[in-house]
Length: 137
Image (cartoon, rainbow, N blue to C red; front, top):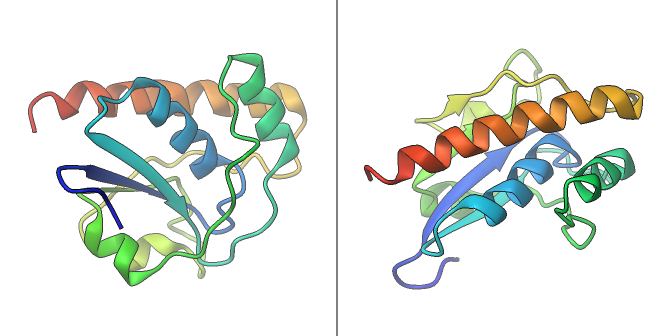
């Protein structure tokens, strides 16, 4: 899955359509080169166009990212695993992750763009915190 020497952070949510895709985009922007993001879900859907729009507004293009189904290989190859906040859902992929952190971020699906922007900003803040913590790893 990863290139030798590469460390992987896995972001998951059910549909892998918005929150985890935004986290992947921000991680690519802020993380050191030796770290790579991947995002996935248990029921991949279509990339949320409001998420794409909100990310474009802050200069991060996620339009080429594709929702992916979570695999055992993704879990095994990741050094860090982040659930976006679906822990109460019966289809939440976090239950498969073992050691993970759950960010408890609201699902933007079906929400107006103003709400998607708020969620985007929370995700950016959390990703920046995560990246700062990588320096000690």
